[in-house]
Image 1: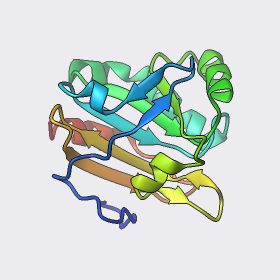
Image 2: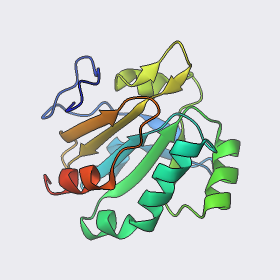
Image 3: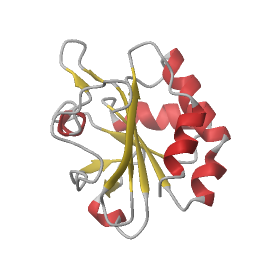
Length: 158
């Protein structure tokens, strides 16, 4: 991580840990099932919170940057799929919101971004290439949004 964020055991070049989580419609999305195309995993604390909504709306408004690079954007929080469906509808998100609800924060833990004191995912981002390898990863401390420019830098590494 370029900001000193803690991601035990994961480094650029590693195979990203596989997972299967329901999206806001209850459809299972597995990382292994998306092999063959790059994926951006965007962990965030909670739906409907101020900074998270600002970040995800900025990604929504710049989704073309990801689409132009052929990258599938997946936003992951510890909320339920029901909360995520209401959140996606209220903000018109055209990308999958994945529910890392049970076991609570299990995928966030695998990626080293779970905050066990607060019971939420931190703001960690992982760009994974078509072969399933992490090509970039970055995060920001609690209370700080990730800058769009940092996503653009990550996309250049594909």
